[in-house]
Image (cartoon, rainbow, N blue to C red; front, side):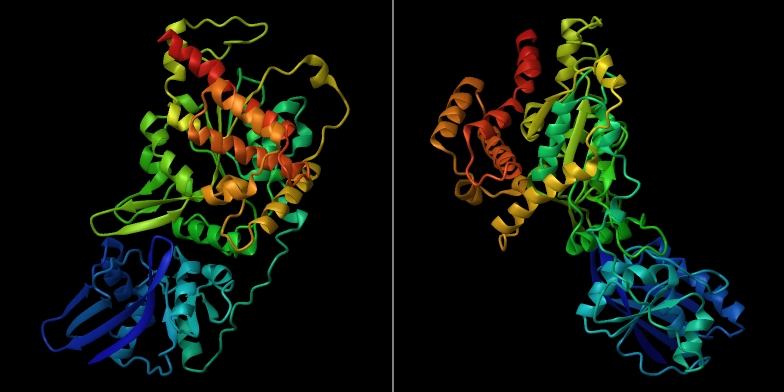
Length: 517
């Protein structure tokens, strides 16, 4: 006897169709699962047997073989429990179900027959729709994210008996309905730390506004207690809201990683990831035998904050270089090769020396010159070159801390950022570029047109500061963003001057380090 059902699989954040075939033949009792399964899939045998017993159904007697095609793609996780059980129920004659040709089944089973959530549901529902299926049966906790996909009915299932009643016509399950939130609403930003709580640090706030307006990477250098981490944590409150397409892509990554809260439909706010400095390179990029996304991808469309930058392992920092340039990363294994999006704003903070007080106006530095040089040397030149803005965060004066006047709130800064992003969206419409930080060389020459004075100033800065080709391009991109904040179509000398000042700290600290060495 033979039967088959449809399911889905996941590779990276892409779903693919899986055919679950079941065959029952005469012979010694056996239950084999083939089709490149992992350990979790093999454990389905015990879970399915237990569900059969708790349903009061006799398990098929004979040799049972379950195959999941295509056999050349690895299938992982417990999501095949449900289609395997459904196929065996039909083989055993316990149920007679029809009209399943356009249906796909995914779900982990408890021993009592309840359905537990699986990872990657959104990507699999998208793939099921593209494969031509019209119905998907999912655990109830996954139904909200699956309902986001239009053009396919998503049925939330809490227990296997509920599913059997639905398919046999006893009691129908209502498809999950998606109620789209207003992603532009201030409610989506509610609860985020606000810039109104930050006293002083006007230069740092301005740098964060420029970074947010253009999607630029940012490095803050300053003594302990000056508010570097406090500023970074408030950056999401001034970023523009996620578009629907960005929310879908971000949710897919979080769903595959298994960190999407049960019952959630979409990620509504831009991610903010802040890994500890002991994180490994694989923790940042992702990995494992079945590669899962790391912090770089989990921060896609949001912010990756690295506090105490020189304390990170040097290999971990160096793996950031390629995704910072390409906006994606590829993880290769012997049996798989997956691609994860990694378009994120890198925000880093660091002290200028091990004790933290080099250059402090009142506290003396206790570090020797060699220790300072070694400390700064942990951040490589190529890494530093990929960071668009460098800003010094100095101690706040007492008068600023004691000032009772309210500081500018995040919503006001965010309005300026959104106006600049809207200009960029209109300018780059149809090119695939979303912000100035992602400008291609061709668009850079076309859209970053300087006035004569600005051209002269940039030429002088290039010669005097010894800028690299990459630094030159990043100064142009930052200048374009400052002009957008100013509402100017042309880039003037004032815009270039501000952009150049954000490239000065590598000369103040790192060139000094080179001289010491």
